Length: 305
Length: 103
Image (cartoon, rainbow over all chains, first blue to last red):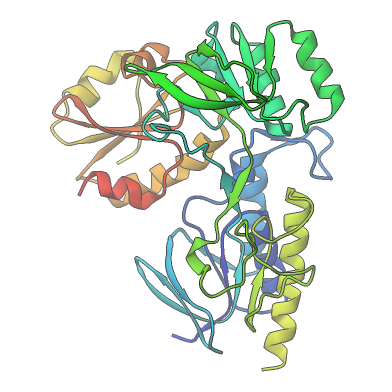
């Protein structure tokens, strides 16, 4: 089989925008996605900060629409997890469990996923008290006490959402102020059932059949607490999904791809678009912008072959 | 075989009394990851017709079923074999993870 002009890894907004631009430029485009189209966007209930939708838009709907846009111009999607990559030479190979695909260029758009805290038993308690999605799981904790860990926008949004459903909401943050804006803190204070644990971090998950509580320690020498709670919602940022090509593509110390605004990596014909790239703002709109740029750079590379 | 909508009324007959394994997807309409998981489950059902039956439980409409199987995070997929919950996967999963369940 002839190599694809462009193979894209990841079906979030960066991937599908790259697919749209690549396909519209007349290139053969294959997009590989291990789960379903959308990435983190697809798991978001309503999106209010992507322009053009005055009433907001469902993340999953936007994902399906972005996919449809790219496929209208001939891009193809396969739901296959990539297991290995050979990116260094002029001919690139992408391995999946189902087979091998050859490409002239590769656009990496694998994104990021929620960071785990790294506590003992965190994984086995997922679905039994540990959650990374308050809007998904909040309703299972109606009237119960819960803890939210983190101090950024996601943690605050989670705490606010849970404050309307749950008994008491503990917000555990390792600093003495939120990273989220002060206006958000005011909303949490008004909620009346949110208690802040500043300069604290979760130390131990307590459980029997399910999570029963949480031990915290103070980072400023004060005394830690033992909290009774049925749920803990973890919102401590993201980790880029770059381990598949860590040995080939240059990454920064946090694992993000070292590529500038032109999305070029250290390897000719390999580009990085979206949340996996080192950049100041990770949003759907910046991921989509990266996708367009990466496809354009791939186009220039292909034209020069 | 179409994916079955499971309720309190048909759960016994369709799942617990089934001769073939049954994969049950617990979901809700407002859950983003569930919406992403749904087409994966559908594709899995399509590709494994005959070997496994696939059903979905809307946790809003069927809270007792979710409670009975201890579902506290969605999506959750449970594989039932011989009337018992044999394996559980919590969270959005790739299709390969579902395929592993029935190997």
